[in-house]
Length: 323
Image 1 (cartoon, rainbow, N blue to C red):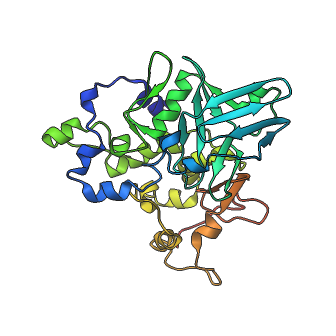
Image 2 (cartoon, helix red, strand yellow):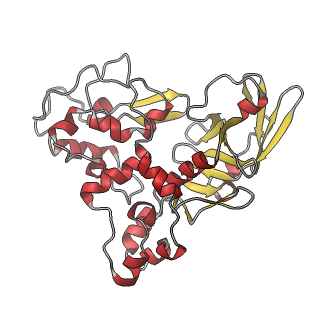
Image 3 (cartoon, rainbow, N blue to C red):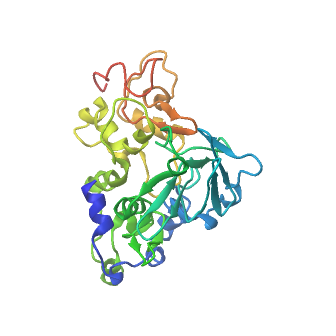
């Protein structure tokens, strides 16, 4: 978390940043592949999001503990018996491969993380991750308030370069989405004189952890575990036996739009040469089970282990050895 806060608050000169367009001139293959990835599409102005036409509830308002909400494409409206609030949708967080959450500027100091997100697989609006507490007012039902520090932290993981605030509190980003410099850092020197640019492979996990290890590891399945992949992985016997060699990039190509299950299983087979009798051939389905801590939200548990039928958040026993 300290690394992320640093990235979000330390001022850097505009000249330090080259922009992904400059990177593409020499790295077109990586750039083209990355442009379709969830990282690259992690943030957009709401009206520019590819799924923007779906951000409408039509004539069926959403209900949250007696409070009604409607999305009109460019705004969210909330109602109770006495009050009404209208919140223009400023930003859409998430590529849309799993979910899209919305953020609105309230004033010069505060932003609002909306209580409802759009889930493409379910084709509907459901509670945003972590926002399931029972609200006592329309204000609470609308979402979670975020001050400038918290807002900068959110944008720090969904944009490239530090977030800045205009006089009216609106957020300015260098590039929406996690583009080249979101992971590799400011690249102007690299572009100008081929200076070395990180991260090195051994340090790549630290870069991933800035955003994918955001909350204290928890034992129970809940919405925030999707942000704890690194911490979950490090609790597994596979990680321990690898002596630190097993990391994010062992299985994930950071420039890719995604990897099929067969690709992940092949990675397992590179260490586990002898598989137990009766195995189904899909390692990750059993040993990295998908879990849904709340409706619409699904993630793969990175705590590699042996799971029972009772739950998919904590293995019944850790793997004893790597054959």
